[in-house]
Length: 314
Length: 313
Image (cartoon, rainbow over all chains, first blue to last red; front, side, top):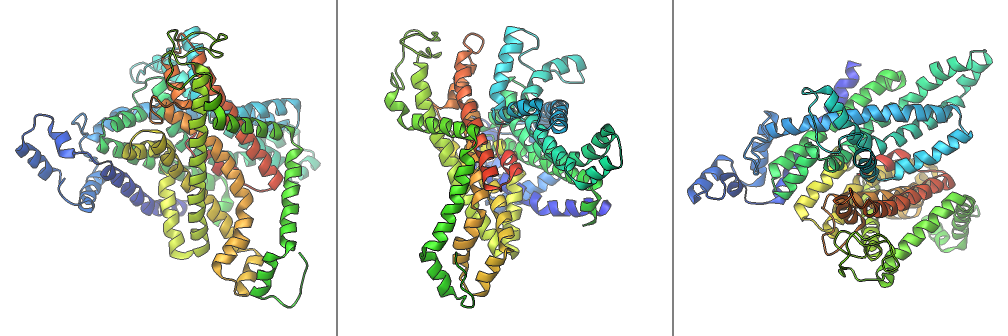
């Protein structure tokens, strides 16, 4: 097990290096006069020169990359041009919102998608399965953010069941947090549960047709026992992988969902940073999310090899 | 294809290319695919929907009842005989806006998907066929690009290029490259193992000919399925970018931009969000149905890559 984790961690090193390279050079391409932005509107030329000196801004890009990488390794991602505050502390402010949104969405995806997939897989070919198949196909294809805006209209504007806007931190009030996060999380989950349902259904149908399942039937095991202990266990393997791969897609979706519900998360931060051409901030957002995705992928791989000894041994 | 034993030379393969044998075999394969595809009513209906969508996108502005920037004193007006879909929050005729928007969105999505597919495929074929250090390097770059959440990468690219329909299209295309490169590389690696490729190599057929005559036809089915899925994704992603205000800018319009302007008045006029969203959903769903049917008719294709590679939201 340890061997798998170490090998996967080592293989991440070149990828992380490339990620930092891409993130940094996007900033360079974005341009803008960093010294002027940091010094403020009324800065004297001497002050600008001093900041230029201090932040190594007159050095060539590859030297600046080195300074930036050195800082990033030590947890300093530079100073935001827009707010003059360290990007790291800005990220610490925005990240929990996106994280709680994404985790809540993942929970909803499992809660909606898994029963749907099991229902379809166990009754493959029935009318229920066919009806749900159409529903799931539309759910996979429909733009989640559009369905989300419709939900806002129905559940927040028309019925006033949930608040339409804003965010309350979990530490402040768990109940308020839940009511505020429910609609955004549901919006985000709407695009993802269909994929889980479909993969679980395909998995169940595939495993049900295998020889060992037929052998279990022949041995006279109860249908229930076969379904839950043998078929589902094997079918869930690919579903776990898909759930892990979903994270990147959820973080993309979060950018839009945060705009619909005006949540102060990473997506909102990235968008305002684009508008103010605040390149250290954008770079910070990209780097953080990329690392989160890589770690989740690693976790998925490790879980998978834990559940499937065949992968572990090869 | 007739079997001519004992005389396998590059010249012979040259001959075969010119002869009708190979062409007939390919046509038979294609015809079979079309027949299988045609038996699926849902897939045919979806094809019709997409065809109508493309036709409307091409001729839309010509049949639009009013001009793109023409405004009327009544804004947010309900549908009437003068304005079949009513007017929007600025006083534009909604139907005309929709027709103009379909042109920008469909063309932008199509261009982005095709450009991304072509560049990604080139990278995938070269990387997969060359192998070795080049392949390793290219794949690590692809890994790095794929570790960014699609939409954030697109936003950062738009930050570099500026907002607008064209930069958004290019950014979308770039975001599709890694998915195609990875898929195609995998298929090329598989195709390389096939006996006929090895045979061609042994007989001294040059690499570029092997790629063109043997590798490309082998990977074509997966490619077409992936392209179809990507087209649907591109349409949705264009909608998302427009919604975020990063795509086309006024006075131009796109489906995403219509969603954005409509969202600001959702409390009073839900129709302005409903209509453009419905168009995106119907077109994207149809493209997915077509991709599914094609995958079954062709008997190959990858589902995971298509659904997760892009910035669907």
